[in-house]
Image 1 (tube, one colour):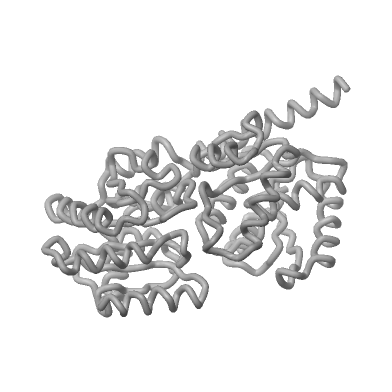
Image 2 (cartoon, helix red, strand yellow):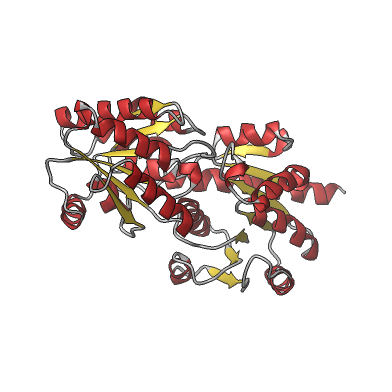
Length: 383
């Protein structure tokens, strides 16, 4: 049984769905319990016949009813494994396992070096609590080497931490010429314009501020001629307003399009010529960049998490929080697109197909969970 906060639209949630369905197809009996129901991907899970348990949490401080409901669900399902997904579900998986004949507990780690001063106190507290409790988890799966190293450095037991990279659905994410034309028309972008986009939630970690600073520098240079800029994604209202106001203060009205959240992401990536990940911290393995690469897009990333190794020789890597370096990298990528055309780059897609497929994610996870089950069975037989 998986335990997650919700199935809202997001990269981590998309990975969870791929893993759930993949394990089911390999013969595992899977279910998922979520703190909050009614989110974007819930219908997809239920339409696939996966057992979904809405824990009915009504807010951050709604704990008593929520915990009783969680205990009831776990006792009813009686899972062999409870797999948490991100910090609070990880810790609750550990606690609630005591109410269900102590199933194996697996933690899922999705981030690396978070900087908690950008968030409220609960995020920092959750991380410190995770570090204390990690010794009691049976297996800890990180989606990046950087995330694994960071957790081990903060006290996670190295012998129980493994890395399984994200898996990208390369059938869902492939170049969509019709979607490109349709979205560019909607966004009033010409086919001859080189379009640079950030596809990420509006959040301090993603560092749209440095991206906007880089855009300002590009607009003042010859390299920026003919470039248009799009930010795809949504976020908290206060941070969204802050970013939009900051863009206006830089004089970028009309140069940066705020496109909001979108559903057909293959069309979004295809409409962009260059996909940028300007993250300042916290990344493990960016789903957006993996998906963009599957669509054959040219990518520019900051050296955060495992992103330098993910793009390899097929993208440009810059230091985080360096607007000048980011502007130069985007300019170089723009020159490449002008010289080689805006079509999909087959070698970029092939890297994802070869190294980061959903089937690889599912098989690696299946093997790790099977080893855990076998180890616990052997221990119970010899005790």
